[in-house]
Length: 316
Image (cartoon, rainbow, N blue to C red; front, side, top):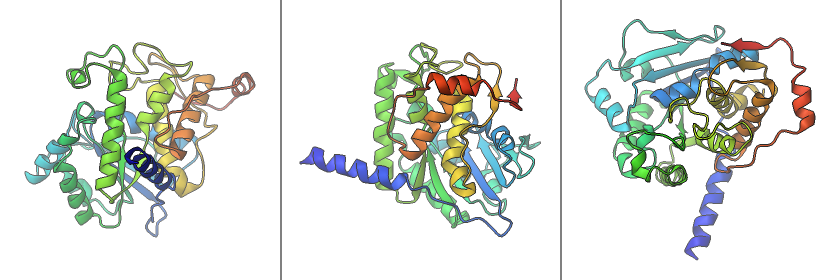
């Protein structure tokens, strides 16, 4: 009976999260997204402005607070001390390119910078499958964000496991086993969703990465990473940009990223026309069902058709 109850609960959560939380924007019609994170949110958003530009979307602003390896606990320490610890990157609506603040900023500064429609948060990668590291810090962060931005939708960024050959210092928490880390991250995700009703949507980056690792484009044992844990500058970051867009932007604009012609030359797995199809398909599938790791396949017909794309936006 307990197993049946847990299964039913998982289905209910999955169905809830496949109904995207559409942000209510201000009168200017601009969707404003703030990421409170670390290098994994950098990986997730780095190509997002370029993707917006490629899709002719000019009414989305994206910003991110960055401290490398920042845990939930560290975020709260920085907040409590009002410490200017963060690099602050911002892509304004209509510009669709990153700019960096001249000086580091506080979390308070970013939270007071107008009205944010969506605010994302995440745990540091090594602790993402260790739920005791979430408490009480996640609850406090949610309270802080909600007090400063009561109308913002809170979104959790689901991160990914390390590569098969990773030498990350925290990989031993999972016996240096990728599958164990994947399962631990997923278990923590279900627990936090059960505990915090304020989290309305999941960005399923971890699901997308795992799906692509089982596809024809994976480069085992690096598994789409550039160093064993950060996403590669090619397919890895591109797939995440597609995922962030499909999860957060599409519900607002009504325009999917499917068929975009953004391409990336470089990284261990460059984004060719065919690789782009795999990444787009994985992002689309996960945005609909964020917990389902599904086989990503591209037919020969679609691959041949993709090679006819023109007017590409290319990142080198």
